[in-house]
Image 1 (cartoon, rainbow, N blue to C red):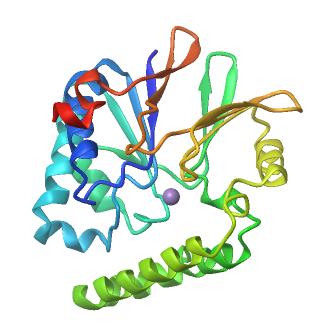
Image 2 (image 1 turned 90 degrees about the vertical axis):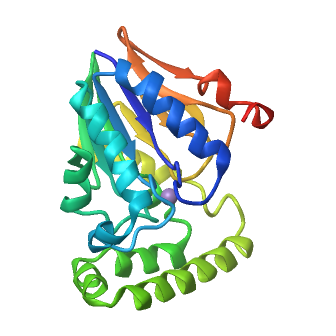
Length: 247
Ligand SMILES: [Mn+2]
């Protein structure tokens, strides 16, 4: 079984390297996997599935996933903090299964927990407060009831507030909290945690037995995580997309 884990592509940011990586990844890499897990922030922003009808770019991304699924790779999509409005219609257009905020998978002898990762940044109290409101069922209903222009205006405001907050907050405050990691892993009885969000790709061996893989965003030259032949491996992005000069 070969499974690939990715997150934080932030597609739609008009970033040529990421677009090229996504294109080559979907063509050459993903079809060789049995399962592809997208652990949040596939899209830089998503204002609700009602937008699919008028967003040709989003539909083109869904079509790439649907094509992959038709070739035999199962696709699983989790919501991130930027695309938390992704719902059933978007997943259906991708031929994908929409994941809950916490998912457990068995990988060989490992029991692994899959998260986006923003829920681990518990030191960032202001962020967690905003998150509780934005990710609530009530906000989802409210957001989907608003006209698209208004949603876009609100998203821009939130984005500006988020940039200002990040600029004024220490990096370690915005990283995953060690206790939050231990707690969520213990609650699910897992020995492995895979998440994105922090943009600090790494493999951490945890003190209390277990490991934690932090996925890379797609703007860095780090690569993607795969589970294959009974072990984890980080693979570099397709070679043709590593050097911006080659685009
Ligand atoms: Mn995120």
